[in-house]
Image 1: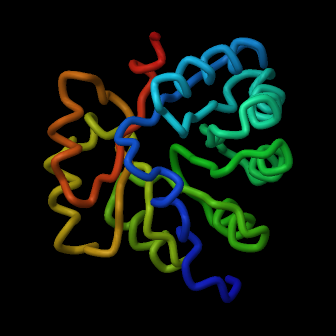
Image 2 (image 1 turned 30 degrees about the vertical axis):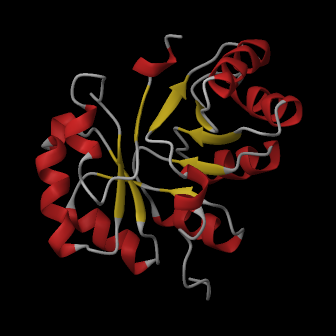
Length: 192
């Protein structure tokens, strides 16, 4: 591990007051720009573009070039190579559905803003050992929902969680009322 004491520093500031992070899976850079423009017009300043398509890296690069006022998270980061590529494409932060030693190490070594995915107390503890304090909780609804995250508050008072997976307009308020949840993320909001 490197000497960076706060690898999650700046992530909460990047999220700011935005309580919903749209998660986009795009088929082209043009589609990504069009959606990003619509979200920016609705006062969203952060979107996530998943690395689930061959167009994702170009989409991140193009959105960052054409719309510098919007922050872009690279989502579904599974391998260190993807993390490096997304960083080179201009991603402001990166998000994984899970976590691994190699991803932690690349994020720390290259000073990449990274939100590792967790689904258990052991994974939270592992991330905290590396100095991470902001986590994606996935798949949130399947893992106990807001009740599970509420239970984490007394054990991990320094940690924040961004739940994803099964979140929608009907259940998001049960998450957002918790102090350790700055935002929720999901694809349902992408239908604009």
